[in-house]
Image (cartoon, rainbow, N blue to C red):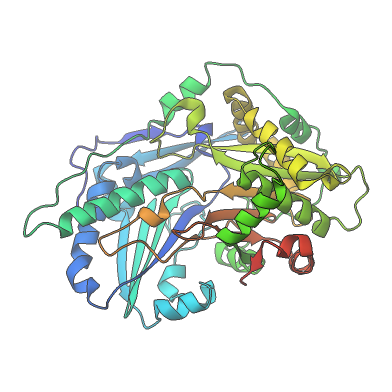
Length: 468
């Protein structure tokens, strides 16, 4: 186990609006399954553990504890990560291993339905709660490894205010590289790889604030919400929620469906939307956005008027906006789009062009305005009430299908499956790579009634398969 040698006494890392809204209580969790022979634990277990702590030692922020302070005057919550050597016993990133009876092959045949997973891979709740005197916060980084007779399962969990999908992708690949280096040498200390280490939250936010925030229609729409007239049923957990994290998790996970789009289906969609060689090129991923938005809106809005609004929120990395490719923190930018029910009945190709135009229009000042809006407690409550309730006509997509999950090779090849614990928000869909050969694996939180309508929509099932 490697503990950072030079942690200053009482070091404090100030988190900023870039790193997520202050009311979120979420761990971001990735799960990878591998096929190996049954002897890997005896030869690789210690090297994996050592490499895990070796890599995390370059990120002292992960050895700290979140501290939240409410600004009574502004109604905002300021978040800090406090790190000190005295906290090592309670805040040390965790790493646990289990021998389990389940076979990776059986999990694979069940399409990786989490009902077939070994319990240790479900033991870390994705919903976080503030620490109390009786129960301190869980470590900011946690790892569970399950050893099967025919393979290995791996769960890595990091507080979402500390890292997003790109950040955890960086950590996973660093960890796998350090493990391979250790396994390839004989009786020597593993050599440390050259690692990008970037978690300077303050400088990124300072750079972003060099320009004035610029409100767009989305921020103005949230500001116009009358909470007295808004829906009262909220799907996302809030600080004031009296339910236990486990009960919230079980209630919302029941509505998460697993789907896939095979590489052949993506090729078919692209070919049908480009009937000739001279047709203007539209990336296939935008065609998928458009198709899913149209089908979801129809399935969720049976009684909607032609001028009723339907929303699409595409969440993507904002690192290009600030030129920080190796930033570990939560640098995600939501791009909200709005169309009426009637407008969505245009061609899929035309809607895909509209989506592309909206995504290209995103700028740093627009992103900053959205981040600041989410920091205001009253405006954040409006946002959740309108956009995170089961009746919201909104599709939110977190597209992490380009992340390098299938390059996370600890020395025995690529994983056979990579997934993420689904976001427990109605209408939220996470897109992951299906495998080394391409395709999309989708985890989508939606009402069962909507799922049934999609299963009977030939436009949808022409390209998309429901797994469970």
